[in-house]
Length: 425
Ligand SMILES: [Zn+2]
Image (cartoon, rainbow, N blue to C red; front, side, top):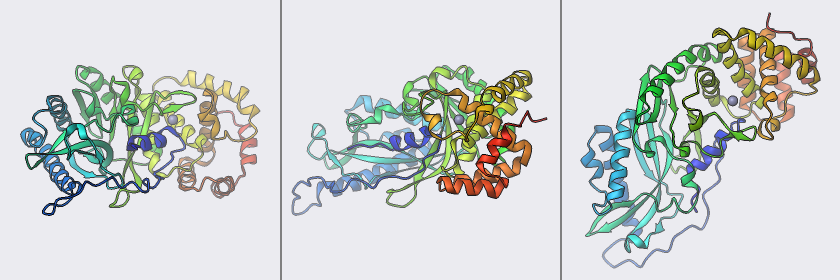
């Protein structure tokens, strides 16, 4: 069984309801057959874990200090392809500028015999914990599958894809695993692109900087920084990251870290923005402002109704659009939505409509609702409403209660008031 952490990440990021960290317990009864040990030696699995631990520690230190030879020291000299891949990953990680890096064998998964690499070879699931300097507030976890084998009394890393064939490790890859990268760095932003796309990295860094001020002033939250991933390879985007029945143009994907030493539970420690490869040269400040808003609000919890999560992001995006000369277009869109959609509103948009069939109107309607709330109650009140709803639980009765607490209004009264709304001025 190989349920990669990527799968967990995907579920959380796909749901704009921000499903957090609830992680199933590791599969029970997963003890692998342990070969008979000799009298003088501990069992092979025990020796493998000790060897793997030492190798991983050496490799993490090598990346942080920039010593390629040390990084490759315990990589099978016979596996040229693996050494090439590793060399590339090393160069990529150096470009990112890491403040912390560590690896731990995931003890929740039984090592798997990989006889093709010799009788001692075992594939293990490894958690890579990586923190980008000036960007990530904490290290985030990502999953690897490494095979270790004993050769002439010495443990080596002999392969990195023996577990990939089993399930969906192929579905999502970290940008540093997708060939040579380039980066563009600005205060609070790091953009990662494939080699040869520096121009796009610089453009996205500028667009990010144009988006950040309004995100900060509206959300009133200041994350340390944000990683923007704009790769050409489709594996940089999990296929599960969909919205309204189509792949998202971009996603604010949650960053997870183990919540306990055994890494049996995970918690959200931040977000990164992943741009759909097909959109990477077209995406600009409006899309970035939308995703940065999700990233900023994401840590408040996962229980806010989708109309508020998406409406808030649309509100920030459209405020930036207004600042950039799109006031007339927005006014026209608002008029249409008020006339055709808000007038027909019976209840606030239910979470399900955002994830079902393609329904662009849900986003527009949600924008109008949030704009109305900010106009009537002020930004601070809307932000506290968001924080309270995000904390959960997401039961209808609780939502209604929180709405009444912050707005002194029921959902029914709110819908009625919306029908009288005619714009922010
Ligand atoms: Zn969104």
